[in-house]
Image (cartoon, rainbow over all chains, first blue to last red; front, side, top):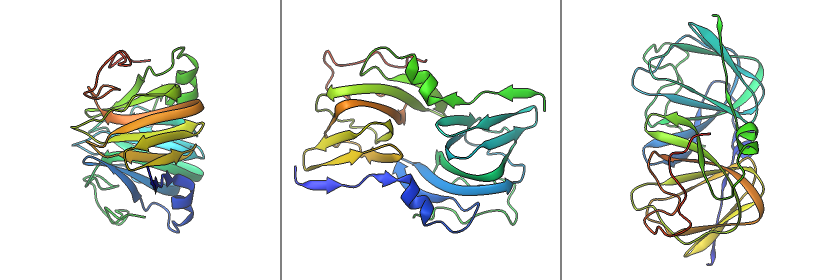
Length: 123
Length: 123
């Protein structure tokens, strides 16, 4: 037992992200990815027709609007948006998030547009 | 937008778990599950030949021994044990964990024995 493996420290990864709304991959689990992202303000309505999406809040208060309601997620809390459900994240102040979703999922789902972040970028 | 959805609060789920080493499902993401578990002391050597396993520490200091080394994981940190890699979790004091793995994975992998917890129990 000689080797010292290093865990992923979310705060260290987040401290090196300079742009909002740009998810960065920090770990993979089979064909799933864990991504950290800093967000603030309003995103666009979108959905992921092929997959659920997990939001775990690391800091701040995240609101996710859905067409029939909303959820507010704080630190130490998570929520899974089911596949095909339209949603729009909103952060009045900066929120630091951990996302879990299959490799290849775009942040804007199938909606696309200029809010689409480059995918599969590791930090 | 009338409905108020509830997030999963890890501390609330953990507060209702009375037994150590008994993972409880708190959310599903496609065919993957998020499980919270309280552990303390030594577990057994085991592996999961068919899947990676993600450990996210919520409180305490977790050490995972592997045959060639070890990793220590604290709050706000995570580590993925690759499939097929033998590992043995160890917590000197109580650790509260979030696990992410495919539905159906047993805590003792293919080793079995009396440390095997009942699987797929929600809280």
